[in-house]
Structure formats: C-alpha cells, structure tokens
Image 1: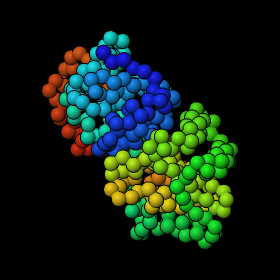
Image 2 (image 1 turned 180 degrees about the vertical axis):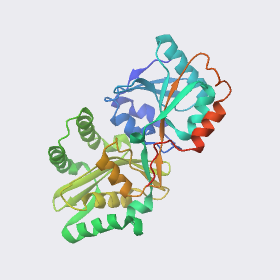
Image 3 (image 1 turned 90 degrees about the vertical axis):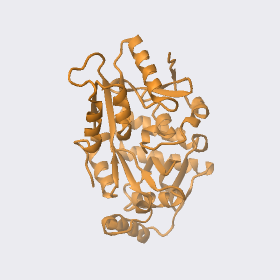
Length: 323
C-alpha cells in the first residue's frame, strides 16, 4: 500500500534519479515545477517497489495523481486504485500527456477525459528564441534592437552567489510594480527567492540581464533531455525590449548542444501573457489532460477504449490554439 509523505526540499537528492527523462516535455514532470510548487499544491510523494508517486491537491479540484515515475505502469495504476478505494476518494490523474492517454485508458476504460487550454505549455525551437530570425519574429527582433540602441552598458551572465543581493533588490522592485493580490503570486515570489539561493542544489541554471550595476531581469531553468525548461522569467516591463533580450540571451547561454526545444510553460489563462507567448511563435502547445476514472460498469464503453483514445489522439483538444 502506498504511504505518502509531504514533499520537502530535503527529499530532492533522493528523488532526482527518477527525473532522467521526460519524453512528453511537460514542465509539470520536472524537478523544478514539482519542487517549486510543492507547498501551494500540498504535494506528497510515495515510493513503492521502485516507483515514485505524487499526490497533489489543486485549488478547487481535490486530490489528484500525476503520472507515476518508473516501473510497471499498470502495476502502478493498481496501487493508486487500491489507495483510493481504501479511502473512498475518486481516482483522478493530472496532468496526463497526450501520448500517455491510450495506456491510461486501456487500464481504466471507463474514464472521463478533459483538458483546459489555460494549462497548455508553450514549446519553441531553440534557434527561434536564440536569434528571432525570420519574418514571423521580426517584432521580437525589433524590440531587441531598440534595447541595444537604448542601453549600451548592458550585459548578460550566469548568476553566482555574489549576484544574490542585486537579484533580491530587483525582485522587490518587480513585486512592487506588478502588485498581484493572489496566493499563487505570493508563492511564486517566495519560491523564486528560495530557488535563487539554491540553484545548484536544484540542478538548475540561472542567468541575469544587467544594465550597469543593476539587474533588470533574470531567468531560471533546467535542462532535461532535449529540452530547456524555463521555470522563472522576470524582467523590468518599463524598459522596452527587456523581456525579449532576456529570452534571447538565456536561450543562447543555456540551450546548448543536445537541446532542441525550449518550454516556457503555460499562460494560466492570463490574456496578456497568452498574447506574449504566442507572439514568440511556438511550434506546439503541449496539451495536458485530466482523467477521472469511473469505477463499475460503463454500458456501451466496454472494450472501446482504443477508439476513444484514438479519437483524442487524432483530433486536438477542442480548445487547442495554434499560433
């Protein structure tokens, strides 16, 4: 039986070996997202027979399970089923990558599948964000050129411990300028500070954009497989081209050999953030599915999981938006 424990920073080294691959390229299945948002989502974990399980509580949705890491996936699904049955709670999985749906639905043929456009990750080719080449990205390139014309004393460099006071000063200015009254915004700021003090321990990379002796933006991410995941990205909105310059410089610095893609995560449904991320011309929006298992008989559905899964896999989620 699964025995779940609250996820803490002290568990990082023990769990890291489970995150050696991420074929779906979803940000939710990385060390960064799981640990940064562990308190907000009340994340708990269990290790049973070499398989890592995560149980989370998303606001307003209740208990959900992420995709198990390692081992026999069908045996893992049975462990989750037994855990939920003993506690009389529904079996809900989230986020499930599109390519894992048929396996999940073959095990739970009576399931309701839903998706939410607000949660989709933005995936880009690395060269597109490094240099903004081509007609489609002319607008981003123009912002960079204006930044270069305006600020001659700029530089970008990987962050070190010596840069932390300047980074914290920038973060204070950023928080005062944005002023969002939400729990997630406060949690984001708190975890950003925590990550900046523990970049190496988290196995991440961080870089800062400077003008003179002042940081005007920084990004934090991690490389997993062929993808650079950008978990934190903040810049001075009052300086034209600052965000575009940060995106370009971070990609040039850290999307090295072996990296083909950059994941800049979701837009949370924020219209401004959505327009911004679409303007960088993603090559794909990575869909995330919530699967609610319906136990017991499901008239008309027995043996039909192949057709249901094929329908989803062959036709994008109705709310998918391509750039």
